Amino acid sequence: MQRVRSWATHENYHVSRLASEGTRPRLPWGHNVGLTTDDTLPILDMLYADKTRFVTRSVVNHLNDITKKHPDAVIKRLDQWQAAGKQSQKELTWMRKHALRGLIKAGHPAAMQHLGYRPDIAISDADISIPAVIKRGEKISIAANFTPSDTGPMIIDDVVDYMKSNGNNAPKVFKLKVLEGKADQVITIAKSHHFNDTASTFRLYAGAHAVHLQINGRIVASAAFKLS
Image (cartoon, rainbow, N blue to C red; front, side, top):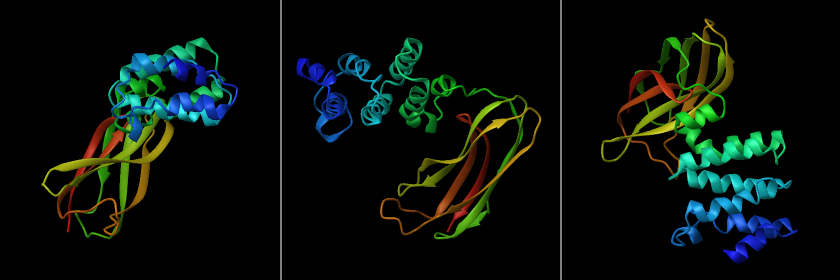
């Protein structure tokens, strides 16, 4: 770790990046190293204000790895970096969004709040529609409608509960839209969705499925469908 700290202050960005990339916990060489966040976060403290995207991208990918087990530690660190003012606001905004991307996709309330999205934003008249029966390989349209009771930024996702081979459901989040909602203004969103049955990394199984409308990490409407 003494050598890693010397990398972090090296004038060559390839070397300084190695201090972050070489200690990431979820890359193949890092799984059994046994480093804790107490070991690695101080290294990232030395790197986050770097002016090279090559380095800051590694820092935020490292943070995204840490969020899998220690989300609160990452959010706290980002709060501290924001308060310190050592990185440009534009770059740090990008870093915060990228570092929390896994948590945002999972609807983590504290991550939503950190980026300015209210998890408890009031929504009325929400519905999401999908054909009742869908054939594997078919491309269909998903439509959603809702009315926010408050004005504020919104991350809108659709979440599909796919059936697995064992009969259980596994949710998969798809991005619909990011927008500024206006109080009492009806919002309508439509999206095509391809139930691709030829993907090499994902297999579809016939049976009961569901789709959900998720706003700022909270499910506000659901619809069931059957995949044949």
